Image (cartoon, rainbow, N blue to C red; front, side, top):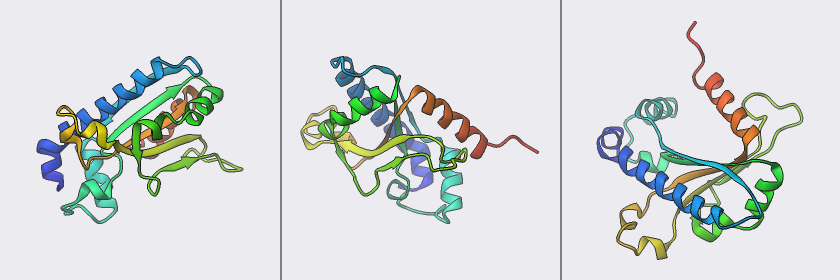
Length: 173
């Protein structure tokens, strides 16, 4: 899929995937009392944001943007505390419910002297629906589609929002 195809049809499909994955996480999370989910957000990558990312990588004319960009669909699972995140992670919610691409999954931890770009904690899984779900008629359209699922605390979410807005969307001069 190229950028034009993403804009025409792909973005809506990735939005539906992100919404579906978010709903699965919310359903599983609401059944567990060992951790508290504050909220689950979902979105499809904006066309202009994708254009900028592809330009920066020299891939604007790529016919395979879905392989080059791991976050065309994205969810953020926001939990209240580090203990909630630890329990959510240790209970295997993500690998139990989704197929995880461990090569593209990345866990972020702050460095000794964190900058705005790396001063937060986030578990960023790249996932797709498992085969059993893809066998269901309502999910078959999501075959071969991936979604990035970020798991973090409320405070790390705030940090992520601030860092994203100041690094990727700086104010005009």
